[in-house]
Length: 127
Image (cartoon, rainbow, N blue to C red; front, side, top):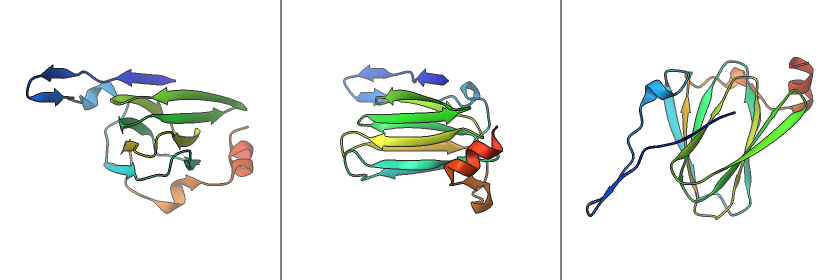
């Protein structure tokens, strides 16, 4: 599991969090933001055939569940921490505060056929 804390530059004018794309194992093609998810709600619940993602917590606290080869791992992301999600890894996110904001960088353009939404199919594919 690849977890990264982002740099933070703080002064009287506020905080600056630069992000260097060369620190993740792919070149992003798109990004999206997930917000306004009710406290305790789970999102994601799928894997991708090709797409790699880097999930960054911008606000709140988000638990990321990663499942591969019958093993589930969990990481709690706090603001400005991110986790790499390779292709063929089942992932879910639990939004812990109700005010969480998740930024997702993706390695591919959106393609509905890239999604694996059945856990049993995922287990079969990744045996």
